[in-house]
Length: 325
Image (cartoon, rainbow, N blue to C red; front, side, top):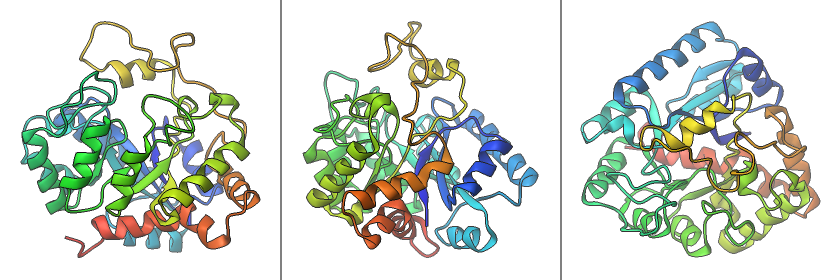
């Protein structure tokens, strides 16, 4: 089983076919960065058209059992998530509405302070806000996963403590391995995994040691060390693959509507736009390279299967499987 807990590709038939060539059974895709509710609904509509156009390649994922259906029929189950709480605007009632539409993950922040929590780029971390506590409670009720990938340390630890369901960091790496601002320190990872949550390892170059030059061996040894520290059952992949996106999309991701300035983000000021992916992971056909790399650093078949997808499947089943509410 292969599950990728975060992608933001420029979707096309080519990529859908590559998902099948790569044996990817399920993906969590970002359908909102800074969009409001109405704009997010339009993104759901766009995906509904793709599901109609390519029914032999992809299907909508709402429940963990949909992954079983996808595997049985040779398709990829697509689960939706937001990298910002902007789709719920300032209305807690929209939490249930977006879940009904098909959302299954929502980040409480995207780099900046939100109405719910503090982002990792802010100088002061005030933690989870009053509204944030209420929204977490409502997300728990309906089965919408709390994602803290772009959140600051205190906010992430508090979210793990407040949430009655395990939370996730869908796409990040340990800070001690690569000191990107958005990577997570040990106490943050421990707070999330210690409460049954998940960490998805990112292959986005700004999150890697040596960035685009990161070796497969270095990446896989990092995974093995993290498994020794926090338990392999809490780890998976969230590649953050942004395949075929034009460089202009980076500006939308980082700037949205909150500033008139250009913010090229951490590690990319010298070269605006998307960085080159490492040679061992260019697209969805390369997941086998990671399996080979994990085996080469001494991980056994059960551990590798867990990281490649089994652990996310179990998390999905507990978070939004039918009857999980």
